[in-house]
Image 1 (tube, rainbow, N blue to C red):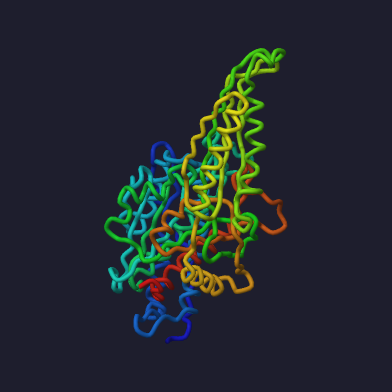
Image 2: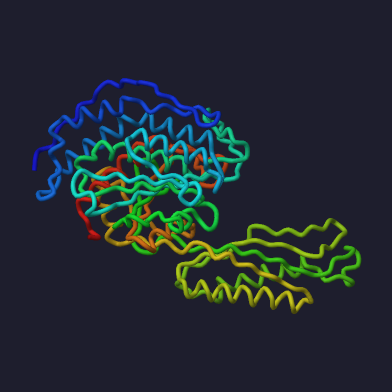
Length: 457
């Protein structure tokens, strides 16, 4: 194999080619990326990939890092545009158009409208393009929160915010796509780019896209995705083999009694008291019914009784979640929750209806794919900045992809050291934008190595 080749840094040459989608001005795709790509392609580094003799990993690392650095200012602008224009689940039409335009400018032919508002594009490599396929996925829906970050590029869509980092995910994958497009002639296989809508809302964009024929023509051999992690500092990467994130089901109760005057409760059947007993009684699901070694969470997030100080309402509505890591226990827990809820209500003279919205399965990372991400992350950021993670009780519809294809869902730190912590799904979430360059480069590097290693051939 050749020794690592120097990748020359060329002056940036910006050439603006703006376009308008609706009434929103989108940032330009700068010609400097194409200029940089063409000059890198003329260097000796283009000979480093050899399907028989392998790849000079150090040369590839240097080249990808240089590409990620050269384009990063523009990728950050992409992220900021997405952050200013967040869209809720199943409403991401502007985001879909933005992503499709960026992919088309890279020379790809994106398919839009998959699962209503999703995008997919295929990059066919220059060597044996039909022999192996690696999929890369990012999500891009936002949350119904009013932003309070004070950022100059804060949300312009009142009451909607990218508070889960999906703007960072999408811009980073676009950055990775830009890098991989410049390596097209050397790729041994093909890359599928999946930009998924509606991760935050059932039934989930992953299932919607698959039901809409996402893999009808090409089923990838491996699939990868990442999520930003505010508990982790910028520059760090984490992953876990096997079970990683919990299944999730939403629970909706309607507790009925008989309303009346607050001063004459003996003439009523108080649904607030019944609902309170249901909440307390269901605590035994985790403490006494769940297997001791099986992580399980049952939480209530909403209790509404439309009475007033002296009015006992006719009914109370409650909402909550249950999360765990075993399908058999998951179904058993559903039945126990139903029996306890209805039994308590009946014993107190009321009624209870329970609707269980069967949600996402738990995420299982393939051991070999996860080891591959770990090893490639060690190459990219250094072994001291890579860590093995614990189970998380949060949920992800990426689990639907992982049920069909060997997968790894990993984490990239976004916390700027020395600054206050701001969590996901909070209106003050801040992303250290240096993480975008790292994510773009690492995702691209892992994809190239996955095509070379072909661990699922």
